[in-house]
Image 1 (cartoon, rainbow, N blue to C red):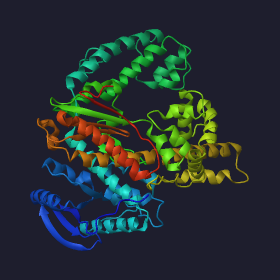
Image 2 (image 1 turned 45 degrees about the horizontal axis):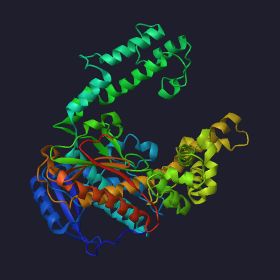
Image 3 (image 1 turned 60 degrees about the vertical axis):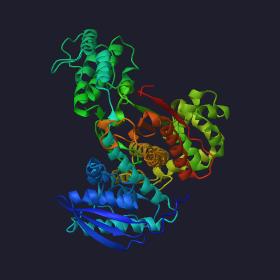
Image 4 (image 1 turned 180 degrees about the vertical axis):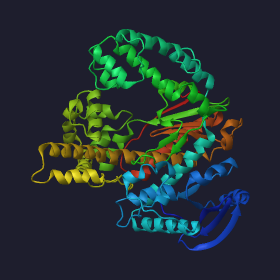
Amino acid sequence: MTAPPRPALERRIALVETGPNAFLAIEFDDAGDELGRAALDAKELIDWVRDREAADAPRWILRSARQIYPRLLKAGVRLARTHDLMLCHAILRDTASVEHPLPPSAEWVPRELVVEAPALFDVVERVAADPVAEFLDQYRAQRSVLDEATDGRLTLLCAAESAGGLVAEEMRAAGLPWDVAAHEAILTATLGSRPVAGGLPSRMVELGDRVRELLDDPTLHLDSQPKLLRALHRVGVHAESTGRWELSEHDHPVIEPLLAYKKLSRLLSANGWSWLSEWVHEGRFRPVYITGGVVTGRWASSGGGALQVPRSLRPAVRADAGWILVVADVAQLEPRMLAAMAHDEAMARAARGTDLYAGVVESGAVSTREEAKYAVLGAMYGATTGDSGRLVPRLRKVYPRAMALVDEAARVGEDGGVVSTWLGRSSPRPSSEWAALQSRATDADAEAAEVTVARRRARDWGRFTRNFVVQGTAAEWSLIWLAELRHRLQRLPPAARPAPASGPFAHEAHLAFFLHDEVILHVPEEHAEAAADAVREAAAAATRRLFGAFPIDVPLDLRVARSAEK
């Protein structure tokens, strides 16, 4: 697989922030030769970028879309193509696809990830005396790595990751349409009447009183795990934690009201009235997305909890008058990616249609759809016990190529090695403490307990690398889906009726939400069918970009509706 060829004379323009409200635009040709420079203040920047985007549609070289794109969007200026140095640095620093990846540098770690950085690599501290020289050095170093990768996969990944950086900022600028009244009605129906300052909703008060009565402790603080565990132990519930899964294993009258209380408590703290007042304004929820915030390439969120909004609140996601939502998600994306990566034609046949698990049953590997789900998930996540562990060996007989791929990824991980996704994002190495433990366990005088711990830790890391290649490739498919969809939506005509709260997208169909393998579009009603076609076309294009002519189905569950409620 190769990335599509670039135009021979593609223009590239670097936008470097040189000081407060001061910028330098540096233009390059496709060979990397500098063509000219322009010094701009903040106001000049807007008009200059708008004019160049309209005239040439260059590829803009940015330190970070988060740094500069919001001010452009606020002025109604959109960028078609970028190379995001911050996002691409993380890929090109860790990739095992080339002999000479980028050296790590604290200067190019996104601020949101600085806390995690020391655990992932040894940061090389470097202070840039000249921001322009530092910027250009990084750009040239990244081009050198991309040029070393001859098959085009890393180039495609960096282009898709950079497009994801634009999408993240555009979705925040547009916002997800949110009906405050509907949200409040759901909270009241679920939690009870809204509490006064410092209190709890009425339904939680009732459940809390019932739990205290059954535990014979009228003053028990239910949100204190140590105190709650002691109270449970006194009545014979010898749980080691207050987690939902462990509590549900015990048979006692207190379990049902306690689990109900904890569920309501999570809703109140994560998405209650306080969340609503903080994160929803002018009918829009505007979370902060972090592109590539997870090592597999999946997105994260640093504000608003966009990736953890519960299904119960989906009815509050409602289109504006004259607009409609297009909601689409992929059925069983990860196992489909596994089949295509492995070129496992038998598994690809099982994936034809909307239900891969039904196809696994038809292949004769297992007897029921439930068994198929357990087996496939167990194969991707390394299950060795229970129903999944029992069923996985059956998949090895029917889908040997797919199983060999994840088994090899697990073996590499257990040995402390690095694995890579389809396009070349590579896994982090295990910690030095992990490596030291494995080394000690090989000593002739190693204690049996230490050997057991080392083997368990090795298997744990193998399960991580087993899933890394599949989840990471699924994330790559989703990135390309987003990029292709964004491009197609830009072609649609403006809306007959604007959506003013959507800011720069008040007249344009746009992406409003993304969660791993799901998108929500906010589109003018008159363009609903065209937008739905764009979603399907973008998915097909993403599959072709990754796997060429290999026959893998990636079907969508797509709905056009006023609300995101299923």
